[in-house]
Length: 360
Image (tube, rainbow, N blue to C red; front, side):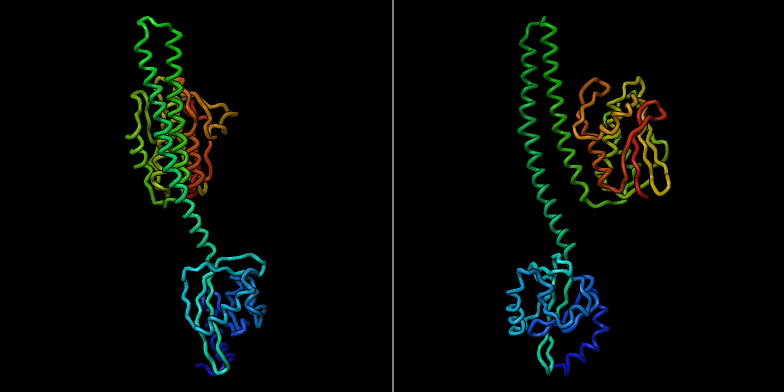
C-alpha cells in the first residue's frame, strides 16, 4: 500500500508520460486526480483542464447518468480489466466527437483511500478497419450470389435462344431469303453482345474488390509473358516489349488483368493487315509512365475520355459491338492502385497509345 497518493503520483509522473496510451487516476467519486500528456492526443484536453474534473466529461452524454454506478461497482469488486475485453466502449473528445476506446483498469490503494488507474487507448481506426473488412466480406458474398445469377439465370436463357436460332436455321428451306439470314445473324449478334455485357459487369465488380488484396513486388515481364500465353493472338498481329519492364508493387491478379485487357483491346480494335502493339515504360520525374501503343485506328480527341466509362459501346475491328467494360476495369485497377491516372493519345505508330503513370 502506498503512503500518499500525491507523493506517489509525483514520483510516477515522469513514467506516466513515457506510456503511449492515455493514463488517468480517478478517485471513488469519479474525480480525475492525475493524468499524463497523452490524454491530450486522445481526448483533446490538457492535463490541467482535466485535473479535479469529473470523469463524466470524457463520456458521451448517454452514459453519464449511469457511469457513477460502474465506478462504485469497480471499487467494490476491485476487478482488474485488461485491454481487449471485447466490450464496445466510447469516449468523448473536447470537441464533442465520439471515439472508440479500449480501457485497462487497475486498483491503487493508499492510506487515504482507493483510486482507479485507467489506461485508455483510442481504437477508432482499428474499428473502422474492422467495419471495412466486414463490409468487404459482405460484398464478396453478394458478388458470389451475383455471379451465380449472371452465369446461370441470365446466360442459360441466352444459350437457349442461340440454340433455337440454330434449329430454326436447320428447319428453313435450303434457299432461305437473305432477310431471314440477316435476322438470324442479328439475333446471334445480340446474344453474343449480352453474354459479353454479362461477363463485363462481373469482371468490373471483381476488379473493384482486388483493391483490398495485398500488393506484392511483381515482375511485369512475367506478367506480360503470361498474358500473351492466355490470349488468342492472330498470326498477323505482333506484340513486343520496347524495353525491359520494371517490377512494381501491385496485386498480381490485378496486374495480369491490366495487361490482358489492354492487349486484347489493341487486338480487337485493329483493322490493319499487320497489327502491331508496342509496350514500354519510362521514368518521368518521380513516376513511371507505361505505354501500350498500337498501329490501329486513332481515337478522336473528343471521344477519349468516354472510353473509360462503364458500358460505353464501341465497334471493334470486326464491326462487332463491344460494351467497353475492358477499359472501365483497367481504369478501376489503375485508380485503386499506386497509379496516378490513365489516358490515351495518338501513338507514333499511327494508332492509339494508352498510357498510365505509376508512383515510384
